[in-house]
Image 1 (tube, rainbow, N blue to C red):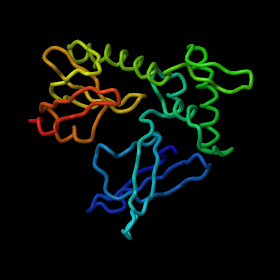
Image 2: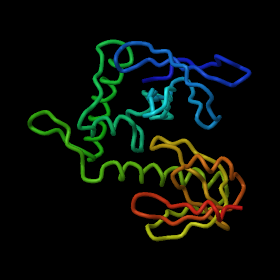
Image 3: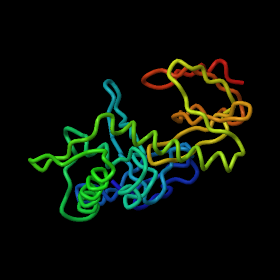
Length: 227
């Protein structure tokens, strides 16, 4: 659901709590323990909180996933692969309550469907169901990356190049960028840069060299080569 509040339960040990306005129409409180700064969500972001007990262990582990860095209303006409799009494609979508965030999310999904149809990224069938265009998510993601590349080029004074499957990426990790499609990393190579999916390991390597190979399902990084 939507992050409605965040704070500290224990300042000495840096333990956090979250208040989630959830799809079920209820507001939930969760003690999520210690969080690294890069994983602390902000109010308005959409997140998932899971409590799991590992086999053979007595302690419950809490896992937080940020599903959208942008607020719900920003996703309706966003150029990018949004949380709403993934919900539309989900064969087992979450149940939405008639109140609270559940009601808001259902209305946003309806408006997002309409926008996708207007962009020729999907159609409404005779049964009233939404049918996505082939490779819809990748098309949306590529649209956003191209636009972000133009904006960052002006900001950084560097040329933006797209990563290609099979290509080796060698460069310097500059900083993260939060986009509709998720969190990405800016990797600088001489007078150009490339945007790649962010990895938590990057935060230990800001300003240092990284190396990886672009594959169909992502990038395989050689962390031992980082310096």
